[in-house]
Image (cartoon, rainbow, N blue to C red; front, side):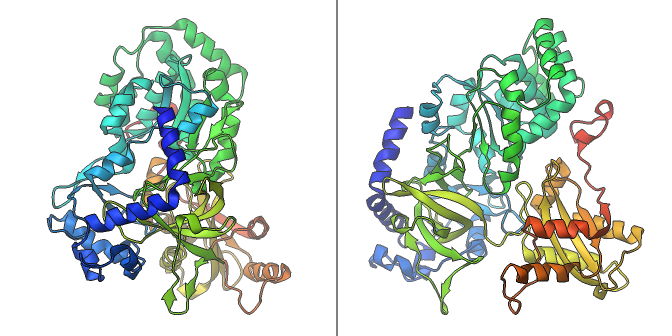
Length: 575
């Protein structure tokens, strides 16, 4: 199977331009006569491919009304000819609220057809088809739209797919564990299964780096109890989820020898190299470590020890994008498979996607990008997204045959991110203004900035305020402002706080003149004084150090406590 996938990738990338044009032709011909294409001047008599550039470049807000009609039950040919079978729910990284991405049955099948791990990894790490995975994946709740369509995340859909169920025999955990809604109880059971079958595990995997660092943080706190379960052949009474208790029932007999063997590993060493010690036959640790996940990579490398850390593939809720064909390389690059979608690229410079005069620039095609340049990705998919701006900014690292290899950089218009959350400048400004109303007057706030602080795990938001009088503020009011900031951010942030993926927000008051010093730093580095904009997201270490040095007082929010930070004996794992 893996050799076939590699041959397919080789063929596709050698003929990328031809495959892309044929795919665009197929998409447009199949969907000719739909409301959307007709609305923009592409009808069945048009030269569809040549007229494709009549279509506007769009973002989710531009097509949200059409998607809502479908989700509400309109059966007309609105975006595509094939009926929509379900919706993927995005993480809400761009707007602060989740998006509904329409998916046809064909597109859904293609999404989960590729192997769970890039075939190149099997070649580099000599992984065989019958390898055993310790996978930290979790399904979220499914919902139904008004029109009766299933709506779920891509991960949840994948875990419920026929492809995954056929592969489930390769996983150390029963399939039901992936479907439990109790995340921390799931982590406990994942870890228990992994320790019980430690000699079999050859791949430790998660979708994103945070989930792995979180799993090992939990392991560090509850390893003693896990070993008690192994020794007695039982399951902790903390596991109250009936799905998990049923899935774990009779999973292993008492094993005092294994428990003692593992106990020596935990007592004699730090957590550094724990993967290598606990799972001696593991050939790789796999997770996405780009973008917002990059700060977790150093910790994962320390935890992995000599076990190679491999970045996962590049995908979005809208479509698959690229495969990591060089798993041993760092930083990770992703080769675009021209069969996944029709790709275009908008040139990106100086913090914005460039426009030519009053008209949007004409994007370049997949094979026309330039090595070293930055672009925003635009996709046209089989499920009815046309010239859709993903918001992902990438840099072209090179080519594999005639298809580019991309390095993911960041999400456009994002200023702060810790886990899967994204907070842009406009949202930050709005929540800061809201909290500043708790002062005697909002004019008391002179300036502000923030950044994602990864000095501790989990990371957290740190926001700096400078008051007009240049001094400190009443501690009680400071705490109230901090709490209000923390609960006023977007849904993905609040979910991260509630689950413990994001730490308590820190609000710092800095001495008068601090933001002037930031301006002086900018000018001293050769920046333009007349074009200087006050930093809303502090990027440089030099600026962060300045604000930290100038901090007069600070407060930590107390909402959404991470349950694993509570006393182990009083922990309610189903929170």
